[in-house]
Length: 286
Length: 308
Image 1 (cartoon, each protein chain N blue to C red):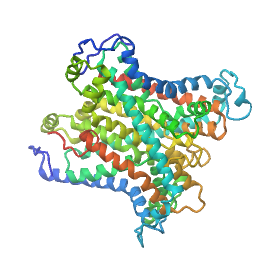
Image 2 (image 1 turned 90 degrees about the horizontal axis):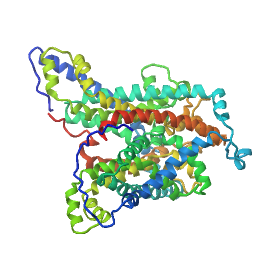
Image 3 (image 1 turned 180 degrees about the vertical axis):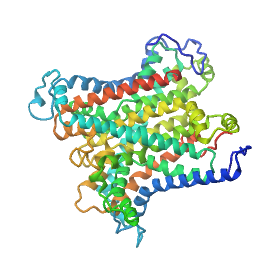
Image 4 (image 1 turned 90 degrees about the vertical axis):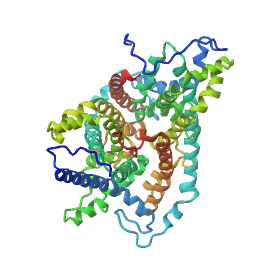
């Protein structure tokens, strides 16, 4: 219990204790309200007879997981998602590093306007772009292409990723590169041998973040991938749920958890890497 | 472009070392090429295409499919006459104000404020639960809330337990249902922003105000809030833009229904463009969404300007 030591005159410790208790009660209530919907998905996944409300499983088992772990239901969609999101994560990371280098290292006339445009486009609603992108994909004959969809997902993540990557790169001192230049290395050579090794954690964050965003995206693959054999988990789980007459809620919950696990794990990895920026564990500086 | 040169945060000394092969345009166009190409083809291109197509009769099937013609403002005239459009715009505003500007923003601020200087355990518990809701994929959040608000769901179970009548929330109050779900899903972001902002407020200021006899609420209103004003602006912009384009959550929970009772602009756009194959009209709606997003984005840039 790290209490701030501000027991000043005029504020009795009794009143402090009452207000602290109140705060804890409110926080506990908030936690409970947030946890209630989550609880259902966890309990229903191990309950073969799961219904729509939270209930303790009478005969807990992993039958639900066994039922959905088939090639058509889970495995192929997961593999599709892995391919699509992995590709878009790697592509975004590489392209962002290349693009961030001139922005971070050279004084170019258009750097500032370009950064403004980048920042501006991070705010544009991707949902709205989907209608023209669909017709673009029709024109380019890219519908049902996992690679095409991955490249598009990459492009939508680029503005934010370039922004992020430039931030990480600005943290690498330029003096190290100057030493490399003196030794006769070119710009890209210096980038590869000096800058990148020093910002690998940052690049991993960009890649993982892109992966998380793509993995959780439903609308983009829903529009651009029509073939059930190409669809990632986000879309197949929706179809699984909406095209069945009699929904097996336990299976839906199990599938939801399976589909969520990768992003939860990756999120924990990122928050560990970035420390205080993404987590709340850091104690407040006193 | 503003002529004022804002000061660089970290003034880096870039000496013009003569580097091999670093002359002229190629120096930056080479490394930036792939990014520029992707952004032009998949972001800028479609937006411009959208701008153009909104004035044509392009469609997926029928006459507009093979023979695209310029129709001027016809799509926009149709939009103005569309009985679904104005309700859609109103629902979108209700959704953004209710779930982002009021819900996520205030709840995030409340949680961040209450968690300040509290024990590690309670912070870990609350933080984990709230973040958990945020980390889950959107479609999973939609399923969870579909189950939670169902006639047979947990909320009604609690209501029955308290002797209150059960309701089919998704049917009777669809907007409230999607707003609650979106608050649940998005509050973590505001909470993170405000936690970071509040930790920057120097405690001495608070303490001296406390000695002067300011109440908790006075201290919050007159000291804390003005100090985190900029973060509040930034956060409001970001969550507004995010919420403006929410599609999946509503689509999976209510599909815009019952009827059109929860059909926000993104859902109307989807219905027109992909369900009714009226691509041009969908583009016109997308154009409106992009314009609104663009305006908010521009305001957001003005707010952030000193940081570039």
